[in-house]
Length: 511
Image (tube, rainbow, N blue to C red; front, side, top):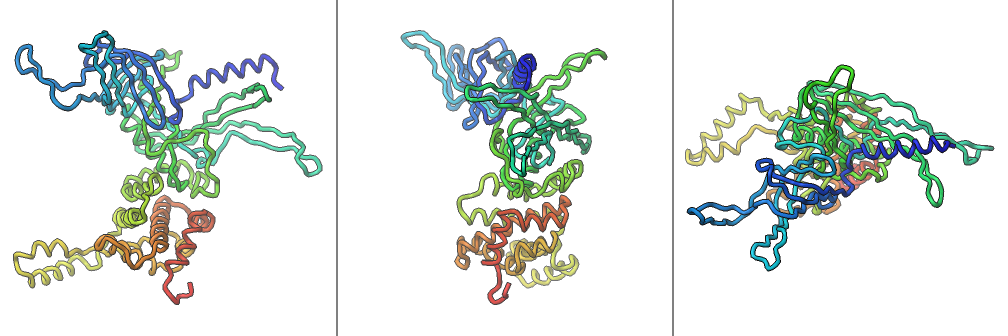
């Protein structure tokens, strides 16, 4: 039991820690202050900036920036045109912090000119992004030296924790005793093309909450990725880095992974600090709308639903591999991520997305070889075109291509991952390739899939998605044993394998 002095220290430490915590994107906040346009800093308007996770950023001004589009026709004569002005940047000062709003659009302006009672104008401005803690000239300004991002289930993926726990027993039964201990966990880092990526733990000091109905002891361990390029960088670069981390965790957990918070660090301000004093670092919290919004207090995904962690592929290995693979296969991974973040309501849309991802992936893997040697194909095409009237040759020439068919691409993709894992996923690869090709072609050319039931289309979408994912993980170097375990243990892939055995097996095959 802590002494009173220790208890007071805990509360003080808690308050200090909470004050320095990043702003969670799933929590509402507001700032009352003054606001101005960078090109006219002398015109300052009072107002309140509010952030709501569901609706975003809204600045309510007591007064108004001029948002009318006007032109001078002659001295003293002004024409007001349709439309309204927008502002890329608005600066503010509130709660003793600089604030930059980006992508600002006035949504409502109420002017009181000519009113019986003179009162201030009112204006509401929507913004796409807020930087809490800095004034910058725009999203492309290289004003930052580091970025830190927290994503849902990052700690589970990191496969490390500062906590250890044990429970006491008497006679083989729990006796109510036990302990929770905290051990330091070192950071893991890797440098890729001059940019350092560091997997870091940040924990609060232990403290006790004395409540009316009891006492609760708490500590919080947060895992985040710190990104430090070799040169100052912009918000655009920071958002790209956050998106890369988010997509990696989404791939690893096979579900949408929301960003919980994003914090930047301003590049060093002014002259260098004296040698006996640390450099001045100012944190900048970013409020924006990521592809998925993280819930910082939501329950973590179950461990058996995770495809891979840093135990399967160490952090220093997966980060450079993911950076290279994401850049090369980005279109395909984006399409598959789309099925996780925002699945379509209709099976036909998901069919086109899954099959399109497979085609794009096949091209990105560099195995897009035609069925004929180039010299043989050129001779064949020349002979065919010679038989066509000249006025129709250009049109026909564009349709004669030396490219693999969709079925060829699907079979080639199925041959790349661990073959035992593919066999566990589907017993009849050829049937899957043929039925997937038929479904896509019927939908694309006829607008319907009369030869497929809904259940078969669902199986086609799920199996094709799984094949794309296994190929991406093959590119990341996921061991064959882990690929097999995923198909056998992950609930969704087990269900996919059952659907493949039921709907994608040739009649009479006995598979």
